[in-house]
Length: 440
Image (cartoon, rainbow, N blue to C red; front, side, top):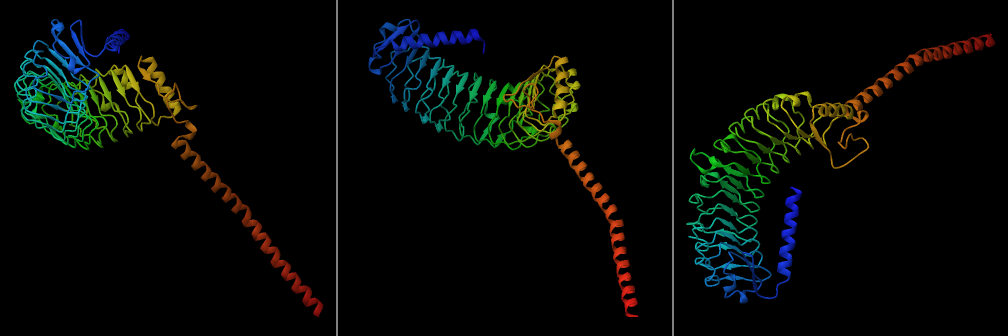
C-alpha cells in the first residue's frame, strides 16, 4: 500500500478516535456524520439536519425494532457494527427511503428475514459479515439495488437466496462460511466478483448456460476449500474471468484442458496444493496471464513447453517445490520480470549459474525468509557434496574401493595359503622319513 495512503488512513483513524473519545453519553454531529453512543439519547436528531451518516458505537442494541429509526429518513448510510445486535424486526428500515449503505457487521445476528431490507430501493451496499447467520430468507433482498453484498464470516451451510433478480449486484462475498456446494448459475449477469474462499466446498456446480451470470465474472476466489479435482466444464463459460484463486485446496493433478477457455485470465493462483506434474498444454491459451503462482506444491519439473506461450507473464512463483533444474534462458523470451525459487532442490553450483543469468536478463529473484550457510543470496540450495548424485557417486566409489581391496587381499592370500599348505606337507614328510630312519 502506498505510504501516502497509509498516512491518510492513520490521520483519519486518530481523528475518529479523538472525536469518539471526547464524547460524553449522547449523540453529536460532526461534519456529515451523526455519532451516537447511547440509544436512549438518539432522539430527536434535530441537530443532525445536515448529516447523512449515522454511526452507533460503544453501545448495546440487542433488538432493532420497527420504530427506532423512523425519524432518520434523510440519512443515506447506517453503520451499526459491533453493537451486539441479535434481532432485526421486519420493516425496521422501511422509513429510511434514502438508505444506500447499511453496515451490520460484527454483531450477533442468526437470521435475515424477508422484510428486513426488502424494498429498500436505493440500497447499494449491505454488509452483514461476521455474525452467526445460519439462515437467509430466499426473498430477503428483493426490491433492492444492492451492488455489494458481504455475507462473509457466518455459519451458512447452503445459500438458497434468490439473487438472480439483483440485476445490479457486482460483488458477492460468501467467504468464511460452511458452504458445501455453490451453483454459479444462481448469479445475476451483473456479477463481476465472487468470493467463496474458506468454506467446505468439495463440488462446484458447473456453469452450463451461456446467458447465466457466471459469464460476466472477472474475479473468482475458490481458495482454501476441499476441492480434490476440477474439470474444464467448471470454467467453460467463464469467458471474462481475469483472476482465479485456487490456492489451499487438495488438488493433486490438473487436466491439460482445465483452463483452455480462460483466454482473458491475468492472475492465476494454484499454490498450496499437492500438484506434482504440470501438463504441457495447461497454459497454452493464457496469452494475457501476468501472474502465475505455483508455489508450495510438489512440482519436480517445469520445462519451457509448459510456459512457452506466456508472453505477458510478469511474475512467477515457484518456491517450496521439488525442482532441481530450470531452463533459465527460456524465461528471457517471455519477458519475465520477477521469480521466486526458494526451498527447492537446486544444487548450489546450478543455482549460482541461474542467478547470474537472471541478473543479466534483469529478472528479479525474490529472496528467502531464512538464511543458512549453504545459501546463495539467501536462497536455499543443496551443497554439491551433499546432493543425491554426489552421495550416489561417493557410495559407488566406496563400493569400488572395497571390492578392489578385497580382490587385492584375495590375490595376496592365495599364494600365501598355497605356500603355507605346501610347507606343512613337506614338514610331515620329513617327520616320517626321520621316524623310519630311526626305526631301522
